[in-house]
Image 1 (cartoon, rainbow, N blue to C red):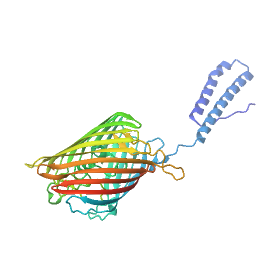
Image 2 (cartoon, one colour):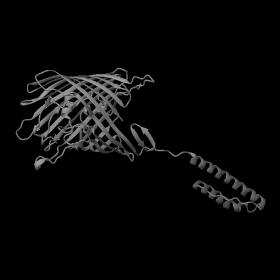
Image 3 (tube, helix red, strand yellow):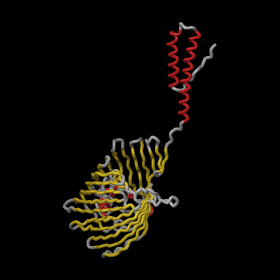
Image 4 (cartoon, rainbow, N blue to C red):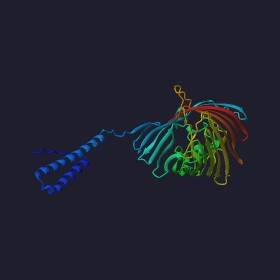
Length: 468
C-alpha cells in the first residue's frame, strides 16, 4: 500500500502548479490504462516527485522574500525632513536666523540726522514645505523677528510664503497663494544667497512688498523651466499683510497687477555661466496698500540693516491710478569670479490731472571667491558658495571665503517731485564655514541728496546667519 502525500499550497503559484500537475495526470490516465499497474504507479510517483520539487522551489522563493526587510520611510537631514521611500510625499521643517550689528558715522553733508548704532534680529523665519502625492507642493513660512523688537503695531508674525503648487506637467509649475512675484534677479534671490547683506537701492524701492509692486504677494503664477531658460507670468493682488478695510470706507480696494520674467543662459556649465534676463509688472493701484491710503510709494533704506530706520530717498505717497516697472539683468560666473547687474525703471500714472512720474536706478556687483569655489546657478537664479572644505579645527578645513564690491544708484527726482537721489559704494567679505552658516561683513559709503538736504555717511554692518 502506497503512502499518500498531501499538499497545502501557500500561494497562487503553488496552486497553479498543483492544478496543472493533477490535470496532466487526469489527461494521461487513459493513455496509461493499458499498461501494467506497477508501471502506471511508478509514472504517477515520478510526476508527484517533480511536483514536490516545484513546490519546494516556490517555498524557497517565498522564504527569501519574507526575509527581505521592508522598505523604510527615509529620514534625511536637509533641515529636519521626512520623505516617503517612493518619493510620493515629503515634509521638511525649514528656517533661517540672521542677526546684525550696524555702526554709522555721518561724515558730511548738511543733514543733521544722528544715525543709530545697534543690533537687531534681522530675520527669524520658521516654516514647513514638502510634497503630496508626487505632483503637489506646498510651503508655509513666517518671520517672527519683529517679536524681538519694540513693536508698536502688535504685528509680530509676518507671513512670507503661503502657497500650494501643482507640478504634474512637464517642466511646469502652477502656484496659488502668497509667493514672490517674478521680478528682479536680486529680489528673487534668497537673503541667504545675496552677495552683499542688503539688496540694492532701486531693487528695494521698486519691488517693496507693501509700498510698491513686487516681492511677496497673493496671486496665481505659471512658470516653465527649460534646459537653459525660464519663463514665468502671473496675476497678483496685494500682500496678505495689507488690510483693505480702511477707516471711513473710502479707497478700500487692494491693488492688483500682471507680473512676468524671462531668463536665458546661452552658457550654462559648472563654473561658467552667462545669464540674461528681463522682468516687469503693470499694476492697478487700487485704493490703498497699507500706508494711510496711499496708492504707491517708492523709497529705500541705505543698504544697511534696519537698526536705523532713516530713508534718504522717498517719493512720499503718490495718488497712482496705475504704475509700472521693468528691468534688464546681466550676470555671469567664470570660475571663482562672479558679476551681476540690473537696470530698473518705474513709472507712475497718477489720477485725474496730476502729473505722471518716471524714475530709474541700477547696480553692478562683482565678487571673487578667494578659496577657489564658484557660486552656483539654477533656473535663472544665482546662489551661495558651497565650501569645498568645510571649516574644521580637526580636519583643517577653512570653509569658503568671498569678497565683493557693488556700486548702486537711484534717482527719484522728476519735475517738481523731489524724491531724492543716492549713490552707494559697498564692499563685503563673506565666510561660509559650511553649507548652512554664513558670516558677513559689509562697509557701505552713502552719498544722498533730497530737496537740497545732503547726507554723507559711512556704515559697517556684520551678520551671522544660519539656514536649514
